[in-house]
Length: 330
Image 1 (cartoon, rainbow, N blue to C red):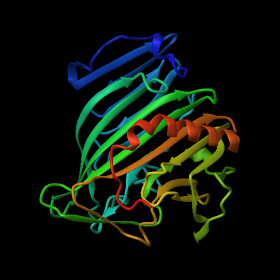
Image 2 (image 1 turned 90 degrees about the vertical axis):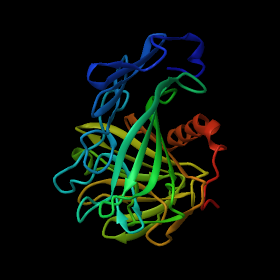
Image 3 (image 1 turned 60 degrees about the vertical axis):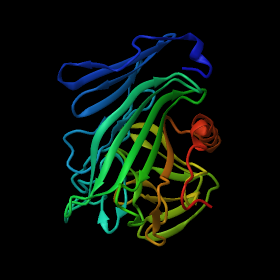
């Protein structure tokens, strides 16, 4: 896949084909590569000619949809779903606390991010690299009252990148108040946000680093909060070195993000908004828009190349940035 490859793209199908059992497939091909979205009753998968890129779990989940698997270009998945020590750690997930209802931890009547419907899963050929895009509508529900606290439109795109070989995931969450609600208070623990649990083999021997080598602050034990444009982690996934990086968009509330990192007893990374100290009030009709990027690559990627991938991601999402006013931005 290359920038400017659009002229060599041809469509294998122009719409999402609904197959028996609620399954669907959407596919395009560019030169020797192809990109496809395959949807069944519980899972959405994206793959190309070289193998899988992403597995997204949305059905038969009690509390929240999430990215269950994310693969490097060589086919190494870096995510761990529901380990015995923390069953509520679902690979790559987004959750916070809303009006006192905890959507992160899954005990004592947790909130539920309920999948409602898919909107227009498709292949996007321009601008930038060809990528699979899917939009999901969700409702954030209070389990005690069964009332909807927030409505979410979640957009995820995934693509292969060059010249630094990597898999890119673009995550956008748009949170709105439902009809009849005038405000919502967003809070949470110091790790609430877009969180990532790594493979067990990546728990030891790994290294976190940030855009400006910021040191941050220790919260407790080995847990640290560090403000930066991006945060990366290098480790060995079942003996194979990999690099994972998360990006915070300049238009996000309270940019740059507070990156939650920990190395003991396991490795974890979250993009947070400091909600445990500064609650965020969502009011009116304007949505709260959050944009993050995630890249996974084979090998140990140096800081300079992570910075280049960050700039490449910013260019890809630039056409969407101006469409919404983000509450709480500086």
